[in-house]
Length: 68
Image 1 (cartoon, rainbow, N blue to C red):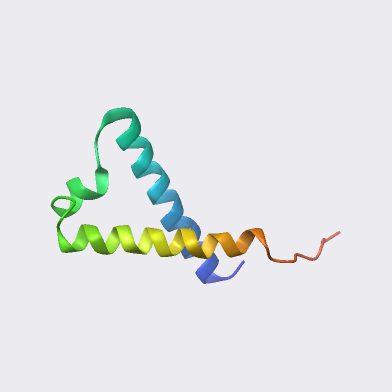
Image 2 (image 1 turned 90 degrees about the vertical axis):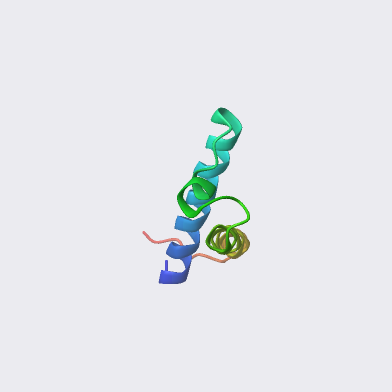
């Protein structure tokens, strides 16, 4: 697993935790930390999470050699 894969997984995990908090507690962690949903930093984080999730789609289709 290369560094881009790890970064993409971390971003996807952050997004999943954030969506879980929104769904369960109606609390947006990213918006709270970076000053609201319309703040530039929040929008950057949302965009990075989206790009990370798109990258993670490629993980599903990669051929992996079975290590013994």
